[in-house]
Image 1 (cartoon, one colour):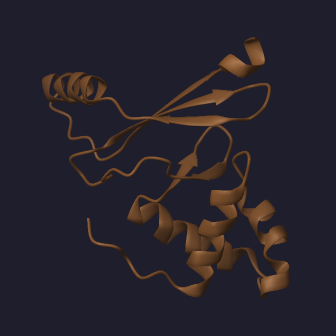
Image 2 (spheres, helix red, strand yellow):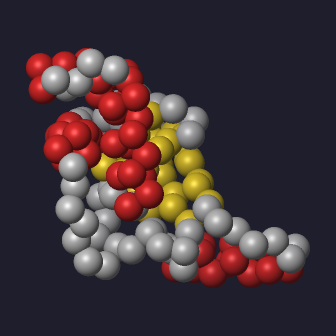
Length: 132
């Protein structure tokens, strides 16, 4: 995958997510970037939309929040499965990429004559640090 040239707003949003210790909502990102000229939620949402499209930011549906991608892999159409382990205690999010899960879900979809465009799996529980 060739590197993409990000706009100033996209780069600022990505940097904010990269340095965040937990997933961030669009409004939290807006608050963090007010000193950089962000005034409207639309500025954040447009940047998030493109960063998500590029596969370098992921939306966590259950939290309505965003995280920066932690794996240097391609999230193109052939990599449509992304899984996350979300800790209920500390908020840590681990991104999981597993070809066996991708293959199994692809087979299940094919059996149902279903063409998958995106699959996001979110597991909620407690990370190793919090259960230790």
